[in-house]
Image 1 (cartoon, rainbow over the protein chains, first blue to last red):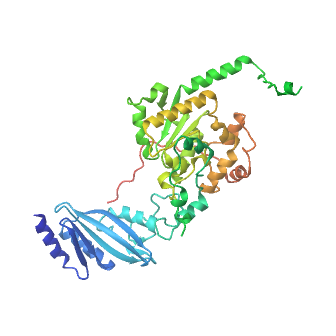
Image 2: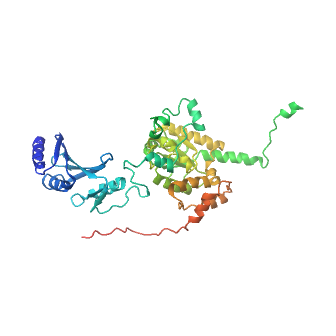
Image 3: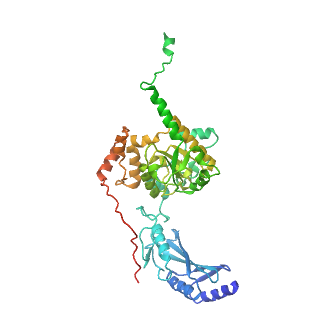
Length: 189
Length: 237
């Protein structure tokens, strides 16, 4: 049964030009789409193939390619299979269309991605701060955001040989990995 | 003559000899009736139910959970303290009645733990409020929690656990660190300086440049609006 569905889905995906379909397993398909073809693909998957559940939208920052990758995961309850649609958009200005009119839960994911990566989704109902309501720095999941530099500026590191630790060291406890082996900024190059 | 000078002279404490006895008694009673407010910020909270319930039974030490900060003695911070959470932790801490004790459980409260590189997590809890005791571990087992709390009881009994006084005496230092993180206009509903005067705990570090900054930005507090029922909008068709 599942093989039939898989075969049928592969035929369906051939209807859209310019997409690359890679079947990972009988229940998992990866589709690489040009950014402008994604709404059509999702509409097709939702309307004709029963992929009615948008599980997640995830985002990857490919800073060397100057691109963001957005991955739309849609699930079908009928064929019990997942389609992951990958698109690439330019990092600047970082604007893409919202799929809120197709999948309402997208509003939630898009708001989250907007907050963490600064991508603006046109047509999404709410682009306000979601979790980082008291954050006024840059979007923190972008690769150019230097977390350690931010900490050096705003927070302070714990001392690694404070007086109160001496007792624990005498008892056989204490710090095993010194910070210079962990912190990237202190690593010997 | 030189030998005579070496004889140590013990100065007896003046005043009512019974006062110390009474203090000892108060401290003894205090250390055996502790109410904890567990501010469960992270994964360490999962070790508290076994520590509280019949397996390890915290109550045999006289320690019980309490629901409100006003009635609690110990503030138990179990896990990472994000900057947003830290604001709430400070609000909670300031609402507690003195004497109050702070226990930081898990590595995260000590040095950030596995969130050492996170932009959103405070690394040193004792910069923002005085901490009496840290229980390190990721996460500490209930045995460690119990042994830590026993140590706190000993410290209360011997009078060493007085870091809550430090918050009043060095309020300027703590407020300065809070302002550095939350911005200059950071303000809590509790007036610590008036409380310090009330407890007669004004120290050299109570007032300073940061408290002056607080006075500049301070807005008078307004009572919260009382509302009954829900104010949910009807969906528009």
